[in-house]
Length: 199
Image (cartoon, rainbow, N blue to C red; front, top):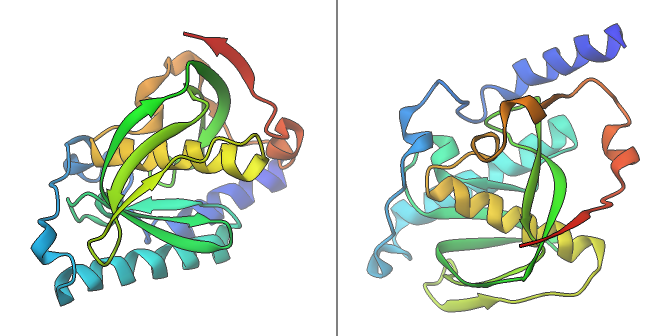
């Protein structure tokens, strides 16, 4: 146990340089700005997207975790995020949720900006949302199948959209429910077994 906790703190220290954490940046809890469509293909925005992809790749390499990152976590207050989706990286810009499932599910989440705290969080099982891709073309996410990958992605997209609105996962739960990452097999035991909670 002590060896694992020591490693958790070492990893947290390594990762701390990659993203802003709670208490470090006031803008983490402020809504980010929409990206003007005419600016999406500019060099400035392309640099932001490239940076986010590189940071997510590095975070995953160092930690083995991390499915998405929002621009604000790099100190950039724009509604841009990148997410690993079915073995590729998808960029979402100015997302707008248009529909959510009737059921909510409880599952433990970890956030790069609140690492190594785990928040058991209730979210809709799936969402539909529209967004602009990195070419400024309107796209729609509406995958609702019950595969593990789709369940995770629906949750990750909600997590990143929350970041764009200045919300961190730990803000949405009681502090009494927060868990410190102290069990190396925590997520293996969880096995993405969600607890269904009707609205």
